[in-house]
Amino acid sequence: MMISDRDDRKIGLNSPLVPPQLPPFLASVFKLKPILGHPSREEVKLVHEAIRALNNFMHNLPAELSQYLFDIQMVCYRQKYPINVLPNEAIYEPPSLPGHIPVELKSITGAPSNKEITFIHTALRITESFSNVPSLFDPDLHAQISQHLFDVQLVVEIRDIKDSLKQLNRIMVGTQNSLARGFNSSRKYGYKSISHNIGAHSLINDYGEVPETHHLPTFKNGEYGVHFSLDELDGGVLARYLRFYGLGEELIEEGEELKIKDDMVGNAKELLSERLFLNR
Image (tube, rainbow, N blue to C red; front, top):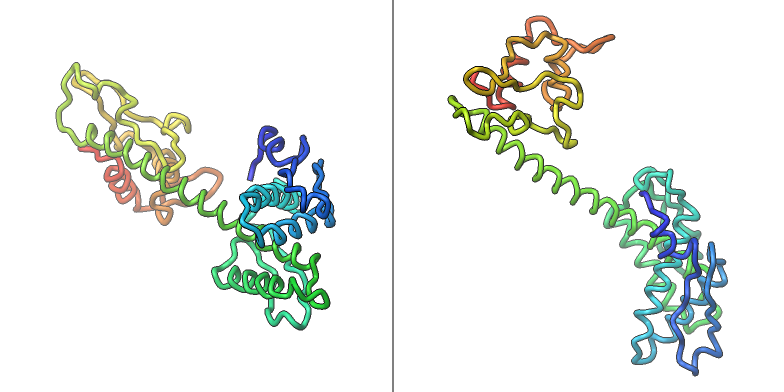
């Protein structure tokens, strides 16, 4: 997860996190101050206490305070999990729970399951139910559980965003490939047609790359139009082409240089021809 300097300013790493102004009847009790850098445990706990207090009143400030808490928790997340640690590889350790909270929270690696998130929500609700019982309510523990929930939910959001981007990428690749295949499946190309634009025939791979970027031979302009002959490809180039498109790994033989396995060249050419929609 990469966060730019601009994002840093938004979440308070390079500029203070400024709390919303509380109504007078609470401002004297909860002295919220701007936070610069990493929030202390006491600062986080004070924001939670202010939110709980305001929830008892009809007021629009809880939403503003919740946003303020979100910014604080984002800073806390980045303090614990540096940007060079991938969210799906990080280990998220829960706080230890006392005996009167009958929920078992375990460490989570990567994105949590729905069941694991439910357990954390349950622990948080039980903790909040003791907010009016000073002997049982631990504000530090409440803040820790809330932060743990934030951490694992952030991983889920990042995963969902990545999945959405992958789906969008597949749509874009599929659209370009459909156009290129339409040109390649035509048996005759008019001299002035778009088919003489070489780039219109090259199919991009799942990473948005064209074969030319990997120094692979591609379509050429000929006397009667655009053509690409697989018969001119040797086993090494053919293997690189399959790897480029993520095809036929079972046909490729690893070594100092990639090559097609013995007696598999015909299969490899047929597979690539189907991918490119060629009339060979």
